[in-house]
Length: 303
Image (cartoon, rainbow, N blue to C red; front, side):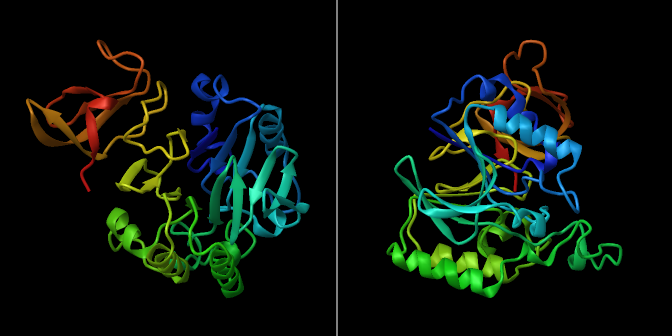
């Protein structure tokens, strides 16, 4: 089976993969896709001790870890790993079972065609915030946005497949979808505009991305992932809560059902392992009512 999840950020957001619901479930026949910001290829010159430790952990797991690049990657180092063909597309081999799914590729994995196009604009560093301290090669790389030839290659491979794939995996969203989740706080750019072109001209079953640090279904066939680990083809709304791995955070505005009415609230406290009567899933205390909700009682973000 193929599973998919969001950013891991070089270990900062690894908790989701350390839970027994993942380590005890995935087998040698399974694949796990990370939707960008893998972050374990980061040190300027070589694999650091921390990177070696985490990459050893990944390689010791029975499943095959696959990741697209996000914006928080060391691109020169990432591209220095051996390149080879794998399941119909090009990969960088980090370890024998840890592979970077390169941009502008279509892979056939377990009978599913998957189009990959990594990259995104950084909104916490670099030119987007006019940060003079962000020196190229020290936390920010211009390659975070695909070059025009990479976008041309993406269009060519999509044409070869009749502009139809089963799944699309990117780090960021098309412009129209990004506006839904971020409003005008994230500006459109060459990549989001190209992805808009893909959305408008390609048929697909489902689109998955990371980048926005939320777990949310934007529509019936577009899902943003961060903390959830779900089977490919599934949505956030149809996947069960993971005990110890809450998807909502303090300050999030959420919708929930109370006395058959849809209400809105703000999360005041998060209890990853449940609270009082709520067991086996995260629980949340609301600021307005001081009410404790189970994660499966929450309808979603009030965006």
